[in-house]
Image (tube, rainbow, N blue to C red; front, side, top):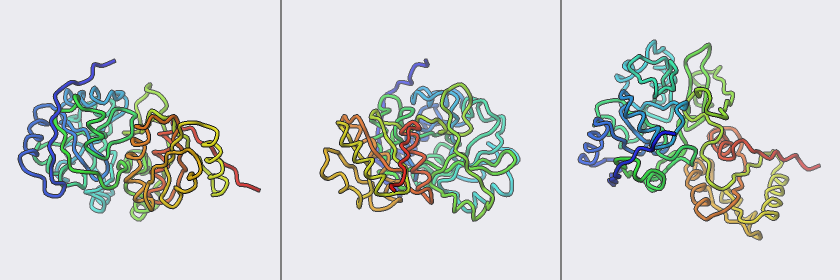
Length: 355
């Protein structure tokens, strides 16, 4: 087991739209010096280091206790940085970037030799994206180099959507936290591989399949989760156990609304110390039971933004169980369902329709 990266953590509050120059400059200096900086993106907070410095990249793995077979995403601020990271970048890649960059889309491309092997888990591909957040872009520009950045949390914990979440997990393991307030989307980027025979989504996220298929009509998505640390993951964030609180998450899935809610209520009635995550309109379903309910908001956009925060909030109350219902798999629902499945470590209760 590698020793954790230890340091003193300084937090700077920055304007999320027009970040103040001094903290950004200090953070950029820290990146160039081989340190770690946590910063907001439009998806979640990232834990950044110099993507071209293998020793700095190693600190990310040590700080997060992240297994070495789980590759990282490289963040850029301008498309001119892409040729320094990837080779044989296709016309399709540039079409996708023209539409979705900056934004919540990560492309997996063939890597250049300059990209450290520990960043890519020894594979010959690299994952790259351009974040759509003024603080993230300012930091990359201040550093003057691409920044490797997975989510800024301990490995397998729910991803951070506020600077406080970062501090809860990584205080003393990150040099600087740039506090730019809560993130917008709340779910990580969609990862799309452009290597191999055909384009394939490896992880659903902030850009929906429907949006991508407007450009790549034959795009496929087949969930592939890695259950152990033996082999290199096909993309960042592919582990089955991921986004998990200390409490046990129980995921219910089914098309019959009444049957699903009946099953969830029955579970809550039979167990102690139960929490639940629901949309606002569904919270009253547990009103007569001893269940701690966290609202995910009015719709799937709100649910995506609130998901990880709700998991952390319920977990902080010492609950044993957290119940959730799998959403419809269209739009952001696919990404939300993916995160819930992995928070539940693949344990799903499929509820049959009532007769």
